[in-house]
Amino acid sequence: MGFANNSNRSEQRTANRSERPAWSRRGVLAALGAVPAVGILAGCSGSADASEGTDAKAGASTKAEVKSPTVAVTPADGTKKAGFTSPVEVTVSDGTLASVEVSGNDGSTLAGSFNDARTKWTSTKNPYSGTKYTVTATPKGAAAQSASFVTKQPSDTFVGYFTPEANSTSGVGMPVSINFTEAVKDRAAVEKAITVTAEPSVEVVGHWFSDTRLDFRPEEYWAAGTKITLSLRLKDVEGTTGVYGTQSKDVTFHIGRRQISTVDLAKKTMTVERDGSTLASYPVSGGDADHTTWSGIMVISERFKQTRMESSTVGLGDEYDISDVPHAQRLTTSGTFIHGNYWASTSVFGSTNTSHGCVGLHDAKGANDSSVPGYKFYAASMLGDVVVVKNSGEKTVEASNGLNGWNLSWADWKAGSAL
Image (tube, rainbow, N blue to C red; front, top):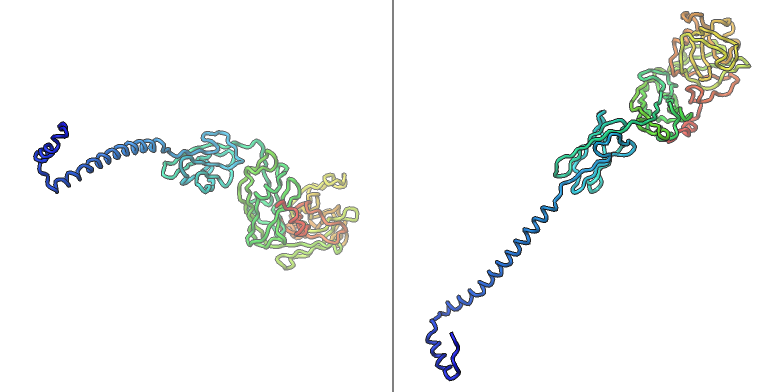
């Protein structure tokens, strides 16, 4: 509709009013209210469309960024000659670790611990050499993942030969003595890998006599009836650079009755006490003035019903060579024995010291006469029994000369430990 000129405005307004439809008040309000409503919906509709588009893009982006946990193992999966001097490590990215299990084909398992975030697990101990390990790691909320590796064998090894023998019964003076096949440089590492425990319980301490010998004993003689357990955990312990132990075992020994024999070479007698009571007293003959017998505490370390004794083996030239010495029991590595003697007159025993350093008892050739002192003492003795020699005119035997560490004070003994 066009607009009229100014002279006709009044008529035009009148005509317009007469031509307009008759709106009610309610209809006007309704119509006025409908206009913004359309605008609001249009606005809401536009916002909803934009939001849905944005959310869809965000959802697609989130799905694209979600990653599955990935586990890594050190040594790496499939390694054939892995090292055995470092712990096993398991790490996870894009997740956390719920559990880790490490088992060897030897039946062993490796325990370990997680870091605070549970993204890394480290074994408490190193893996053993020459062993295949399977690692099973389970991330939280995900399937388990596995890996395997084989550790290499060490090129150089050592072992420890121990005394007494497994499951044997010995006297109360028997130490646990270990001789190594290679010189040990890291004494602390090796000694830490060896423990000796006793039932009934008593403190047992190690003492190094050399780079190849380590003995263990308590402060006093073992109690009669004691059970001793030697635990060797030397496998993969580096005794010296590049040389590793191979043993991982427990060995049990037992202590029998308590027998202490005291040889008084001033009186030329030996008194045998068992479990606190006198068992027997024998006349003896010790070393003469030129070949005095060691004094001190000695432990029987070897026993022979008959054995050959040659003076040349102890630095005495060709002074004697006896092929059938009866009832010989070794007291020192250097060659001191307490043994039967059939070649000397019976009057010698109890009256004169005539030997080359050994302690002799009257005996019979052939070692089968049960009536003579040599036979009786031998039959009553066992490895580990204590023989104390006094008034011999000789100094105290070196603690390392045989199984004779009892000649050291407890303080001196403990000073020889590397721990």
